[in-house]
Each structure stands twice: as C-alpha cells, then as structure tokens.
Image (cartoon, rainbow, N blue to C red; front, side, top):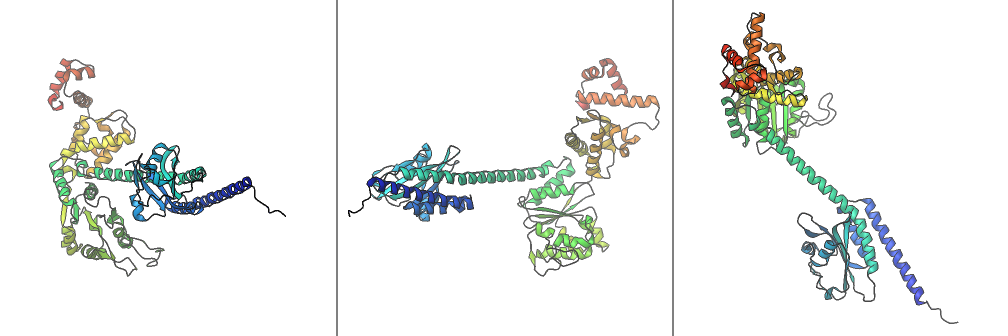
Length: 521
C-alpha cells in the first residue's frame, strides 16, 4: 500500500490551529493572573514570564511614560538584570520604544543587527538572530507605555501574528496601568490636600493670627517666637477665657513638630479616678471595665506636643507620675510592666497661682519648677482694652457669616459699652456677647439693646439714670449722629443728607452734643 502523505495545505491548517490554541491558552492564563489582582506590582512580572514562555521569547519588557518628565522607563522586565533595567531609559521618539510611544503604532524590527533604530540601551547585544517587536499600551486612546519582546529571528516567519497577540496582551495590561494611574493621582491629591491642611493649620495658629495689637499681646507674640523652635516645656498662665489654648496651638504649629500630633487634655474636666488612665493608658484587665489595651495621651502625642490645660487641678498622686515623665521621658501603663519611652513636647496652662499652691502644699514644688521653664502670661481683656474693638469686629464677621446675616458693624454706643465693661469672662465672654448680638440683630448694625443685660448699665451705655423722655430722645439722637458720622468718615454734609436734615441743623446738634467729627475721619 502506498504511504500516506500529509498535504501541505492540511499541514499549514494544523499549524495554524495549534498556534491559535497556544495563543488562546496564553490569553486565558493572563486573564487568570489579572483576575487575581490588578495591582501593577502583582501582575506585570507574571504576565511577562507567561508571554515569554508561550512565545519562545528571551526578553520581554514593559515601559511606562512619565508624563511630568517625558521619560520612558522600564517598569518590569523578563530576562534582564537590575542593572540592564536601569539602563532602559528613553525619550519620546528615541529608538523603537520612543517611536512607538510617540506615534501609538506598533513596530517590528525583523533583524536587530540591521536596524539603526534598535539602540540596545540595556546592552543585551545586537545579535543577528534576533527580532524585536514593540506595541503601544493605550488607556482611553492615550499612549501610556509600550510592551516589547525579543524573539529568535526566523526569515520565513510572519511576525504579524505576534504583533496581534502582543496588542491584545497590551490592552489587557492597560486596565492595570489605568488603575495604577488613578491610585497615583489619588495619592498625589491626598498629599497636596495634607500639605494644604498643614499649611492652613500653621497659618491659622501662627501668632500673627491671634487677634490683638496691644503692647501686652506683642509681648506674648515675642515669647511665642522665642520658644516655638525649642523643645522647652512651656507654662501658659492667665485667667479663664484669655486664649491660653490658642497660644499653645501657636507654639506647636510654629515648631519643628508642626506635622506631628497635637494632643489636648483638660485636667479639670477629668475625674481623679480616670485621669491616670487618660494620661498614661492602661492594659486590658487592669481594672473593672478595662476590656482592651488603651494608649494614653502621652503615647498618642509621641513625636508631637501634649497640651495639659488646667494643670493646677492635677491630683497629687498624678503629679508624681508627671514629674517622672518630664524627667525620664518614660512611664508604664496602668496594670503594665513594660516601660514606654516617649518624645513629647509638653505645654501646660493654668488659671491658678501655682506658686501660691506650692506654698500651701497643694502642688509639688519640684513639679512646679519642671513646668515653669518658660512661662508665658496671657493678659486679661481688661488690661488690653486696645484690642476690644478689633476682637469684636472679628467675632462680628465670623458669626455673621456663620449665621448668614447681613450684620456689618457695631454702633458707636455699643463700642462705648464694650470699652467700659470690665469683662470678667475675658475674650470668651466677648465672643459669646457678639454671637448673641448677631443672632438677635434685625438690621445690619449692632445697637446697645442687642447686647446682653450684663452690659446694659447706665455707666456702660452713657444713658442717664433718670429715664425721662427728653433725655432718652437726646441720647438716641446723639447715637444716630455719631453712627452717621462714622459711616461718612466725619463728613457733616454727607451725614446731613443721610439723616434727611440740613448741614446747618446737624452742625448745631454736633456742637450741642459735643461731638468731634474729626475722630471719625
């Protein structure tokens, strides 16, 4: 019987089918890799290795374009050493890779030894038996990189099938590239946002933004500038409501620890039974209710600053532990045996006379001197009256914006009342007073009757104690004239027109009420 022979056309069909099966197997394997993760770090190397094995390739590289610098760098490679990977750097249009990224079109170098475009920057050699294929990686029509392979040079082999297969693989990788780009952009956005917030915090709490230009506050600003950059312990002294916490913020956000934690603890608000746990933390089971380990304020403030407000209210048992932390920079949690070391800048504040408390035996003398390294005294509002109007205007604008009210200024009578009041609650009381006035005001000016009853006194408002009609009308008329002169910057003619009067009549009343228009100019 004659020997069976395979027809050349049949053999070609069989080879074509085998190639298609092999390609489908490769694409299936790559899809499985991509299903496991779309993180570039997880999938690129396995994908390149799978492609190299199935396509009989010695080298395979994935390059990505850096949009900021214009450089094209090797992101991952198969068959290249780390040193060779570092050499693979291209500019747009440079070499085969640069041309593919620039044009977005695949390129095939049949024999690398014959082509000047193949630069061999990785120094793997222009061997005469090598073909080079490079296809673009596109994300939504934008070329973001390239996928390239080296394979054995075979003159009779049509490389168009390889180009088609690599193009499909490149499109599959593009999704991972897209996700990576989104992640990078999100990281950059978050980094910019964090920097903006840090800058905002530094700006918000810098001494220049503490309201007040009085001589007394200038002294406070100078002290903040002197101590901020150091690691010295600061004791802020002053009455309640003077803004001691704001000074502590300014010290922290103008220090080298500005990007580290700023932790606060109000000692007077913490019961004696829990203050130790709040400051130093506790271990699970150390007392009833301790169901888990908990870090204290000192641990949370590690690397940054800890602000202890009302330090004079700390009980004697805690004063001893505070002294150790300040001296040794170490402590143990409640119920724990492990010594915890911390790097914390301590800022404390008090409205009490600690020196008198030391003399009375209510505060440890050694702790007092540890805290009293750099004292800052914040003056009460009654000793910085030059700042009252500026503070009031600031609070007026703040609460008008918050409450969406068109309240623009304080009347002259209100200013007189604010300046004559003794302000036992200091800046906090002034803020509350202006907030209330804004809430009850119906027009765009704060008048005396908008202020709290505590300020409604004859001495503060300038009204006589005898409430006869003539004197009350005169007082109201005087306030109207002063407010009008304030609005027109002392221009009598403009004020007369605004009040529906004549310049002669208004001039007479100004003389009668002993008003000096020049002070409003």
